[in-house]
Image: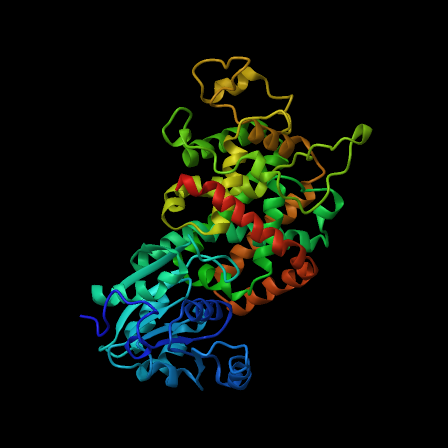
Length: 494
């Protein structure tokens, strides 16, 4: 039974409200403090590393600072006074920090964590917290700059009463997020399935372009539609802190398996490209398409496409050079190796991304799944890149259709954008060096994760991040708007 009247909200008298504590005032800790303060919760206690106390105190005691946030010296002071306590610290350090501050936890407190990997967090809580405290851990599946409204917020009732879980939900209700109830093991599997491969793809993409010292979208390459989404997600990832991705990759055992398979898929697809094995590449990618998105005519295939060309064409970072008579030139076809490898990886690991889309998808997952689905399934429109002239209609229908397509309606087995990517992968040489660098980068990130070294991960990440630093601002606002539009356009399909 809760010590507080339930349901409770910020309109209750201050002395009847729970004291909320946050240990760790990084980007996510500050986001939580801001939302809770704005909602009107009266008693919020925060701290960061002891050496940052004076700076944090100055920031939250200015005339413009909220009066309901109190900065305390350290985690001991926050722990011993909080009724609901959240650790918002890097996954790498969760055990050490809970070991230090856990024994000071107030009797009856509900303890939570905001790390991206729950197994180490739960192990630390069980090891170092007193037995007379409860554990209801949480995880907002988005970054600190994304609106919390409508986004998934995982709640894990690990060692707690239903009343304590309800109290946590009351406290977080002002976020207007969508609560998703998972065990900590389910959480780690879902986050691996929705984030690990996507992070690997875009980290590799950035590392490849860094190795070539190139911003290709500024040269008229990789611009428009799908390319804008890919480039923007890459810049968005590298504009964040390295530890946001390192914890998931290194500490989540499911993530390690997926990152390794992604590197293997990338290598094997590139090998088919170099050998000029167009038939082998097409067979592999069509099998992957049917495994992930469903075979032609299946119920899974009948779902609406997440992203339409009209949504994709709203955004652009680079400029497509004009063609004849000043008319806009269509985007140059390329292999889309990152998308091919991602879908191939999912197929090999028997992952259904749409299951996780309805469960706990991040905004980036929605975006990247949307562009992958578009490449593999979207019909050809008049303003799209034309299908490869080297692929006869008979060979397309022979892949998985029992009857030849009509001239007016494409066969359900016909994926024209995928066919164009396959044709470009085999016959176009302009992107071959980029693809080679991508393969090297994907294998490098896989090796980096296998070393389980946060320092190696940090060095590799920051080297690439530094190369793109001057481009973060231009991508920032565009990325926010892109995520907003894409999430709104797909909200009805959840």
